[in-house]
Length: 323
Figure 1 (cartoon, helix red, strand yellow):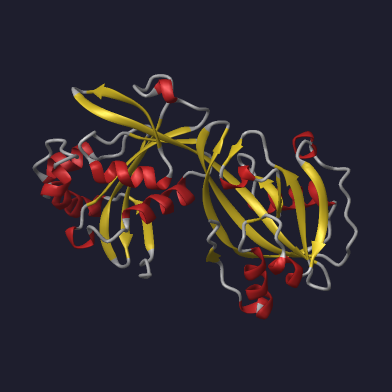
Figure 2 (cartoon, helix red, strand yellow):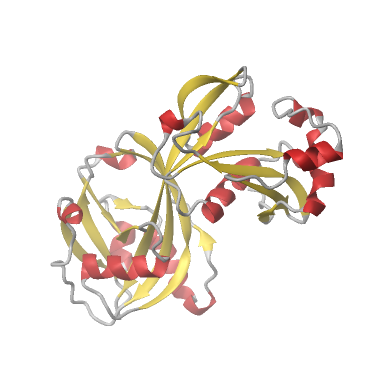
């Protein structure tokens, strides 16, 4: 598998207009993104700061690569019928011809959503029906088609995906056993775990709007295990698309290693939602976890924990494959 270069996204500045102007004249951009701006002054006027729109330039490695923009979708927007509480519309293109057809676009989209959509519940995109590459990209990321709509005389495919951020804890005791929760399958959850009536998973849950990640971690540890005294370190993040309440939802999960000095577990602080699916908590040895025939999600927990324990002080934050 090829290594994806570092992706950096920054606010569009005055000095970026010449390269943006150059990209907007490229044939592959104008095919689906042609605002009629042919001169540098026209580009400057069109892409100047505007209320409700945020404009970005992104870099792949050390090369300027493309343009990204986002806008709030509200009751006055033409896409208001697809509105959730916090809905953001996004558009982007890779303008640098040397960086086309390398599989970078989905990583740019993922990077933007992780870095700039923390308060967002839904993302909308609107590719043209003839833009097969864009439609394929969005479907691959998890977007679903909502409708086809005529905007400014052009047909657009309206696609959407919901977002949910969660924090997860791989909890170790002094013997380096791991605490997992046995839960029933959520009634609103549709994915590969649905074929099982229950499964084991790490403790953790949703990060509330405006809630710092470490605050969410502490809250979940208290609610689900009664833990208030612990040491923590970041492990990494993973992404997974599930159908929640019948709609595609991309989970962006932040994982922590959490060390506790006690085996005592308190479950009296569970929320009502947690009580509805909770079965039990159990400490697992790494050996038992790696050999179990029971369903554990994600399936990489044993290997991830074993790798971390080899050199915890040298662990580097990484992407975790949750499939």
